[in-house]
Image (cartoon, rainbow, N blue to C red):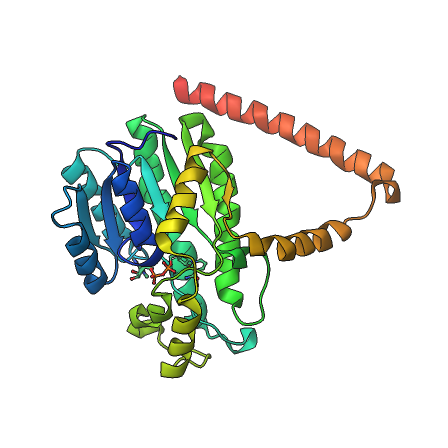
Length: 306
Ligand SMILES: NC(=O)c1ccc[n+]([C@@H]2O[C@H](COP(=O)([O-])OP(=O)(O)OC[C@H]3O[C@@H](n4cnc5c(N)ncnc54)[C@H](O)[C@@H]3O)[C@@H](O)[C@H]2O)c1
């Protein structure tokens, strides 16, 4: 996608950090922007920023883990702007860090619910509407460089982001036929308010196995104050959309550790010579299965038509 003028862009977590940067960049590019966020104070600040700027911006208070509210937000977008979005940014996120083995079910449920569940809900809500509108579009999921490898202190965050990377690849393949592009952005450090993520943690999921206090929040604030400016990162994401890049990774410092990690994985694969007969047998079975599935799908399609 190269032309953004007049397109509706829906941005979760759009009232702070990277999401707010995306709102600024895509509003400047001529989009009608919907900012969806769980924090009313962030929404108020974002709306105040755009006031008097002659920008088409609509704010919705939304918890992306609430599927009913998500559907209502999608209806609201269609009412306000007359159509579903052609641009979707599944960007809202939270974090909390601690030793893997100390994680509670509530740590798992909160992080997985927002980071993975929120993206799933965004896809389930909007993809059918985008397909039905027939105008194509573009979806970018915000993941993290942490999604490429496990971590000692951020196991749940990394697991959720790994799933976001993976599902983005699947949607990238599946939505091409509808003219809908899909990318995943995997940032390293961003200058944002994510240090305050714990403020939106639901009461019912408060039980944590980690140390979360003023000191831990302050230390996160310090590290994120050195992150990439959200508008700069959003600019890289816009370029990634224009170039239809599956992965958007505008952090050169990530290259070395990614190379090391993927090389370790590749080195774990047995060479072809180790089992040529087994490879042949398994590949033949796979090809036969794929052919059978193609026939099954074709028959189901014919039945649908009849
Ligand atoms: N900050 C970093 O260094 C960093 C690094 C890699 C990836 N990321 C990812 O970038 C994305 C944006 O985060 P950010 O750093 O800009 O943080 P941020 O806290 O500044 O912005 C995130 C916004 O999401 C909102 N949000 C949180 N839970 C929500 C929910 N349930 N429903 C709706 N909105 C919700 C918050 O209120 C906040 O306004 C996240 O997915 C995060 O995981 C951040």
